[in-house]
Image (cartoon, rainbow, N blue to C red; front, side, top):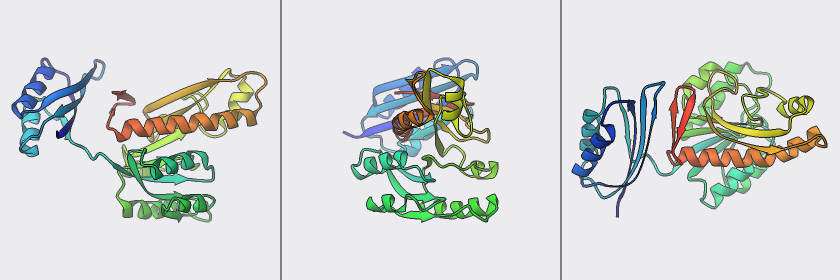
Length: 279
C-alpha cells in the first residue's frame, strides 16, 4: 500500500485537525499516525501526518490543504525519503567515522555525497568508504575566499543538509544565510553552557558534575541555534580534561546520529529559536 507523509506548519486556528482530516479523507487517504502541537506563544500549529492510500493528484491535495488552512501556511507532501548530505570536518574522526559506517550499511536514512575537510587528515578514512573527499584549506586565505571555495564544492552535490561533524571553524553570517535551515552542528557541551572553544577544559575548571553534547541548527549566533538533541553523562572530581574529552566523544556520536535521524525522517520543525520534534 502506498504511504503518504504530510507536514504542516501554520498559524493556529479553530478546527485545524478536523479540516486537515476532511481533506485527506476526501482524497481517500487513511490517517495512520498524526502528531500535532500548538506553540501558544508563537501562535503556531504544527502537524506531521502519516497516511495509507494513494491519492490521484498531489497538486490537488496540496491546493486543497492550503485552501483549508490559514494564510501563509507551509505544506509539504511526501518529502524525499533519503536525504543527500555533505559532511564538513577538520581533524577529529569519531563523528565522521560513525556517520560513514551508517552510510555504508544503509542505516543513516541519507546518502553521504562527499566529505569536505579544511585539513586532509580524514581523507583516507573517507575514501575507505568510497565517498569523495575534498580538501579545502583555510590557510593563507580570507574567510570569504575559503567559504566560497567550500560553497563551490557543496553546490556541486545539491545536498539537502550540511552536517558539521566537528568542523572547527566559525562560519560567516553570509555562509549561514546561504544554507539557511540546512546546517546541523554537533557541539561538545550541554548548551547553553560553555559555548565556543574548549568546552571540556571550561567544564573541568568549573568542576561540573555533568558533561554533555548538543546537536543544533547553525545560526549567526555562535552555538545558539535551535537545539535538536541533547544528552549528558555524569563526571566527578577524578576526571581529567582528557577523561572528559574521551567520554565526551562517545556521547557526541550518539547525539549527532540521533539528531540526523530525526531531521532526515522529517520529524523536526523549527519555531523561532526552538524545535518541535515528533518522535
